[in-house]
Image (cartoon, rainbow, N blue to C red):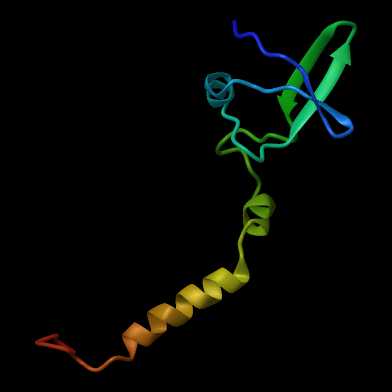
Amino acid sequence: MSLTKLRQQGGAVVLTIPSDIAARAGWRVGTVLDVTADGEAVSIRPSGRVARGRRTMAQLLAGIDENEIRVFNDALSDEMNDTPQGREAI
């Protein structure tokens, strides 16, 4: 068990989660968390977390950056149009 102390930052009360605990939970900087309170107990869980390998095709496709793919394909096509540099079989 780790001890941590609440602190004030602007209008919010901030709870620091020790790095080792965040790592064990699979959380990184930027992870969105759901925080709920039940009496004196607080529960913190990832928001909308989907287990690895359990995403739908639509979720996978939504994560594709079309511009990044276009730039990558353009870079590859430049290499395909180069003249031979050595003893390549064409």
